Length: 106
Image (tube, rainbow, N blue to C red; front, side, top):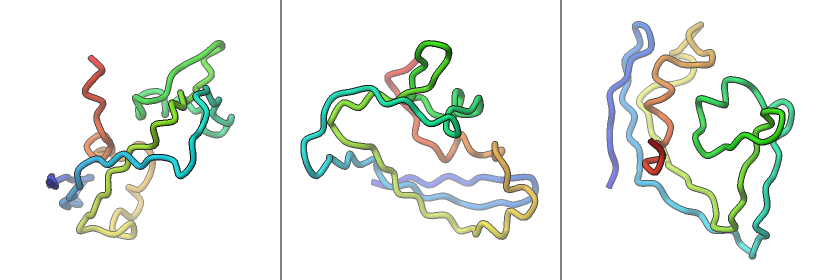
């Protein structure tokens, strides 16, 4: 089942259709381990954007690899990147509406 939402970024209005989340398992078994993000990916903005990251010593962001796979949600929007013009910078005013929500967190 897909869901749709209407969004706006400044004066730009568009609709996003999201398919149901789908867990994509690894092709071969993978170890359960913690992977540190690169320094480029270890940005302050990611701390509020992605709920599946965790913070380690000295505030280093990391991913807990459980071997289960990765969650993907396919979106389809009736807008192009060019239509955002100068508004296309992080964070987009509607970014939180385009990302999956972890319902196990507060």
